[in-house]
Length: 226
Image (cartoon, rainbow, N blue to C red):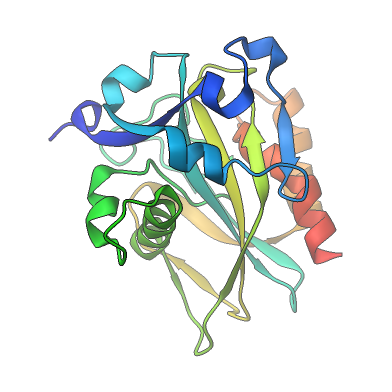
């Protein structure tokens, strides 16, 4: 099945923000202490073909966007997306630097529910954990900790206009993260300073690109790491 035929979760923009106008929606990082979209997602989510959702500004596609950090090293796992179309099919993000692991919440994620009632939060958690297991291996004997920091809404570009990020911090003591997915061209731990340098270089060098969500996430990541 082609990606455009995948059945994914969407939520009406009006249900989320109380407005359908992009300019009136909150932008950037939205702290979980100030915003809670879980009830709205639970009440208003539906399933839609990905090909239809990608061009429909009336809906947002929730994405669990997980950032892996090692507080002991004070470093963040970062990676560069593959540019080869056979390895990475999303041409709008190909070749970008990113420090968020995530993907669309598919209907298959709802088949793993513990509760009989379809709970959007549980479906999102299933999707988050699936994406982490598919894309990377965390080399540690201790289980990692996960915390929702907040949300990312960025309507400044055509990718962000139809997606809503749920920013999770994955805290681990692993000294190595191993990429598993062919969509990752290269990856490893970097300091916050190195990530900031990549963002600065991207402003003057057109060959260097960074996910807008990753750039937005830098400040809350820095705050989390202290």
